[in-house]
Length: 96
Image (cartoon, rainbow, N blue to C red; front, side):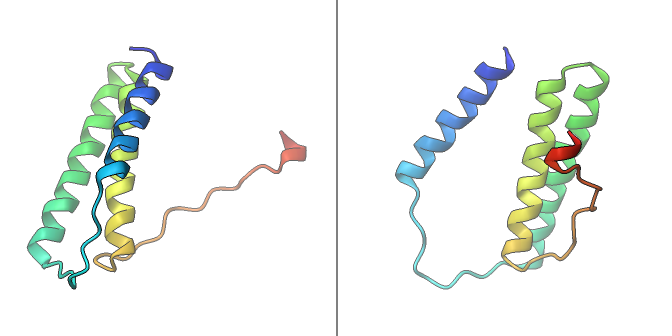
């Protein structure tokens, strides 16, 4: 599957979810065991990303690490974990 096909597939899937998503109005409680399960899932996605990188399946590797980052970001936004992404020197447009 090409990168554009892969991106289209994931975009379409996300668009469908957003047409159906229902935000709960009830208070949300996240217990530690649930957080651990999500962290473990994120670790599994990272493991997959490394595996596919070695297999030179870069689009699958990128997708896997993006899932990992998304889960970690979601946990952070919920206040269930705390961390900061490593900061890298960014090029300005004039340097590109």
